[in-house]
Length: 389
Image: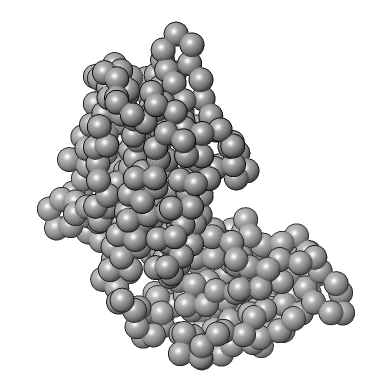
């Protein structure tokens, strides 16, 4: 498997520091959350290759604080510091020289700020949604001369466009996700529960070093008396079994070595009906129309518009919990967002997930592909079987 070289992490930090300096910042405080979770670890891992395995536990002053969190103190001038609550499992994984491993994370972050001179002026916070209130309160008390500013977009700009090593990481993750998706859809037959379907995909993920993020899935029947089987926590928790005549869909996301995959497919249980096929093919054709627009120089909004127009031309409404046609992907959900209000210009080596789901007359169809923007188009990473009818 392709690895991201240590020098690439140093180059990332250097570019981020240059941008911070241009914005008039003295430096950045980058916060991420780990502890076995599969979201919001990306900023620290992007800069250092570190992920903390320790789970979140409440603070016990004098013993430990801010467990499951890691911080990078990144001054515009001076040596950056990683403050971690967990010892890296292998030294060679680390891509930063100065590492402080501590139980009292808050105290060590404050000490690192003082050592690097970040005790006055403007300091940007990256990962503000992961910064615990307890940490923020103590930072404000310990550094009263600092003006703390939210600067997530600064690092987000760099994370949008992937390096060649990251592209290969995401290609591999997508292929593992494709195999897991296929295993689940093969298992989705009459007599199986949602949990049994997910277990088939989990076997592929676990044996390939992957982790499940989530699986949005449901099944049911359309028509005059529609039914739906779905649960929220976990999304595969229903005890009802699939039956002939049902529709079934799953949207599976996860990570391999920290890099995300995100795929969706639909399937009839037993022989398909004409209306099932129509609802399954609607989002598939809309996604394919959106993908046909992707190339450098096109905006995210243009891609979203192409998908929406195709969907509506097929007689389906553009609605749902996620009002978009996809998003960037990497060490998390990255920009750009494939929505009509996002005018980000696409660039080579942006990795995008293009997706759409449809609910119509009690039926549900779901389809999602992942790939990379190339010199003149879009190369698919997803290679899971498309049609199951």
